[in-house]
Amino acid sequence: TSIDRRVKGIPSPRPLTHDLIVSVVEHLGGQLQDVLINELREHTYYAKLRVRHNGELIEIDSRPSDAIAVAVTCRPPLPIYVNEEVLEEVLGSS
Image (cartoon, rainbow, N blue to C red; front, side, top):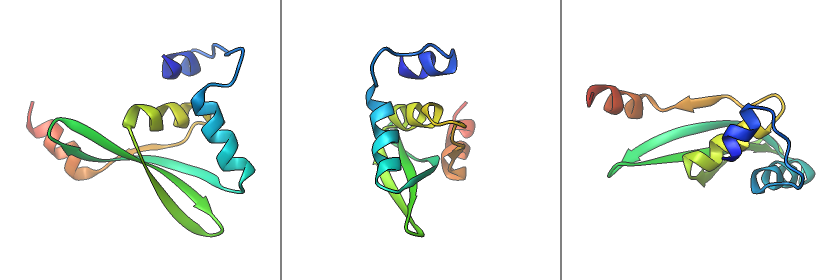
């Protein structure tokens, strides 16, 4: 997977979708801030890719796997946060 390749430092011969996202954000003057896994609904996780642009924090809805892939594509990798309610729900259901 894209995440596994990045973590292991395996280069891709051509840019992957996550490379493209990082490049587009940077070329448009944005700065990728972090990833927030913010919701668990009906056994599906939701995430936000957070971008700072012109002093404004923009939250972009994302699948967690895509947001994490973007996070590990960045240098240095972005922080990944989990909403406390999500964590409590997951830990409470074990």
